[in-house]
Amino acid sequence: MIFIVTWITSKKATNEGFFIGNKTSPWYVVAYGMIGASLSGVTFMSVPGWVGTTQFSYMMVVIGYLIGYFVIATVLMPMYYRLNLTSIYTYLEQRFGFWSYKTGAFFFLLSRTIGASFRMFLVINVLQIFVFEQWGVPFWLTVVIFISLIILYTFKGGIKTIIWTDTLQTTFMLLAVVLSIILISRELNYNFIDLISNVIDNKMSKVIFTDWHDKRFFIKQFLSGIFISIVMTGLDQEMMQKNLSCRNIKDAQKNMFTFSFVLVFVNLMFLFLGVVLYIYSSTKGIVITGTSDNLFPVIALNHLGSIAGLVFIIGLISAAYPSADGALTSLTTSVCIDFIKLDKRENITESQKKRIRYAVHISFALILLMVIIIFQLINNKAVIDKLFTVAGYTYGPLLGLYAFGLFTKFNIKDKLVPLICIISPIICYILSENSVKWLFGYKFGFELLILNGFITFVGLLIIMKSTKKNN
Image (cartoon, rainbow, N blue to C red):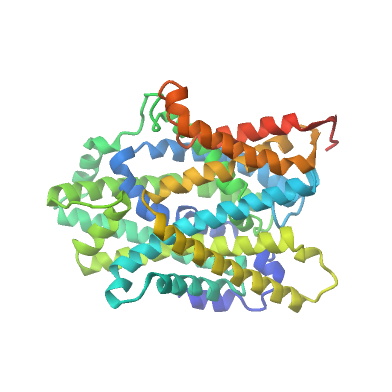
């Protein structure tokens, strides 16, 4: 089905179609497809398992998302459309200069490469353990198969194709979650009312934690959600590339507002599934070994029968591909626009530009392959926790750069920006590792991202020039 969509959407594909979909994407299609892209295999696997240790505290992060998405729709997106950007990091060049621009683009490449690799690893590892290992297929070959399929359907159409394939994949992912809940409730002999009441009465459904030392402290979670959504959507080329493919700013804003509210209910559904899975494992005496990421696949593939197993596999793949294909396309776009300057090279033909783009696309596929294999050797905790921890270090400098650019009129010493953006994550890491000792038992959670952005902002104030920039 994906390849049929690809064949239709990639006809007469151009570089503009690959990068921004010729700005013809219907906003409601983008909004629906972005649900799958923002959730991915990480949410599908980690969030249900995560309920065992963090309960429903993640909902405060999700509620914070709403504020963040409002900021994106009313502050960032109008600026991106006004400047007619293909890569959102071009703004940094216009505002600060060459080194700020390259630093912002580099941190995106680093963030997205690591994040996409984590997400893909989670899915590929499950497919390896429960399917390919039984056939004697090595892990590295499973990774090659997975990434090769992504290359095949994104190679030509890029974002123009992904907008529509994401819609298909999101549908199957959500169906898989709903069907899984139904199948488990039948095994437990629960009707719909019984299921709801058992989840509400369960201690795992607790949302608000009031101990300020705790990583789950509701204010920390809420504020973190605001800034996580701003940086991982509003300052992320992959997510903004889809928004920039809409016809105009009004359509893009409709997309963002619709997507943000639907996402709250979808995340709630995943947390609900998590409690249901734990109730089932407790009732049936199932012991889950390893990380909490194993909860859903072990129950679906080993205890609920072949139909549930098939539903899970389809849902998992459907959750994995929207984030993986978008990551590969956005990485290709960033390198082509931010570093090769393909959009400004008038001395080469369209076909030559395509060949360069193809080479970059395949190169990044190989990089993702290598990172996934490396990550397989070091994985030892829930992937979603790692994803946001890494994002706190790599997206923080982007947050500081954009905040300084948007909310001050000062010039900075552009050549010193890379130094500031390297020092800030190092300071954050030192504080995070010693916070319990230095800060009276305080433990950093997702709010590390906010601290990172703040330190970057202060660093930019230090390297500020005496003259203001006229905007």
